[in-house]
Amino acid sequence: MPVYEYVCTECAEKIEVKATISEKEKGLNVVCPKCGSKKVVQFFGNIWISRSSEGGNNPLRCGPQAGAGCCG
Ligand SMILES: [Zn+2]
Image (cartoon, rainbow, N blue to C red; front, side, top):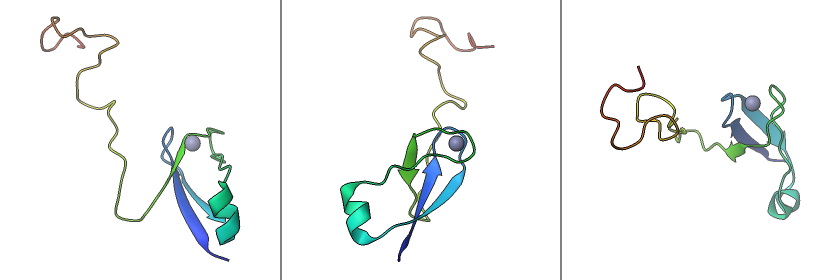
């Protein structure tokens, strides 16, 4: 049985899921065991998720006219 690797987009926990090909094709219901989030994406080893919460503008707090440094 192949093992599929997933990663949680909430806490970056790596999750290994054993499933058959047919189970995978039907869609796996993967839940993060650490935080319980269902926001998991398949992990292919070399690809990592870029986390948009770091460094950039936060549109929820900083409008485009607010200028640089408004987030503190
Ligand atoms: Zn998680």
